[in-house]
Length: 135
Image (cartoon, rainbow, N blue to C red; front, side, top):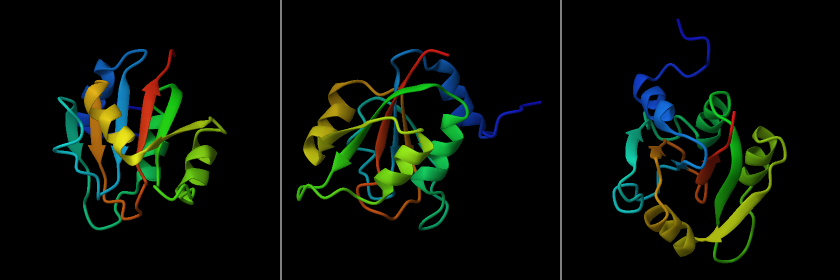
């Protein structure tokens, strides 16, 4: 019987294939997952508008994997979305590396992702790329 928080069979299978340096995208419901994640495995979790949130998925994944790096999409006007403070809290203060919107898209398509997860998150700029660390 599983003892972790994640019980989603498809997510667990993809996470089991990740190793040190693998990259995982958790995307808000606005993210063009079909066009902007290369050949990554895709898991669509969006149930309703707002469910689940990116931070809920991040919390579950953080309980399953070590995270050594986090990258976020910075709005063109340079303002920091309030969700960043939620990311930092969940990641125990881990620095968030910021990328411009198109730089973020390029990062997801040109630097291979192992897994791309779509959520029901409705806030904009609520996407995060995680790099898996060593256990």
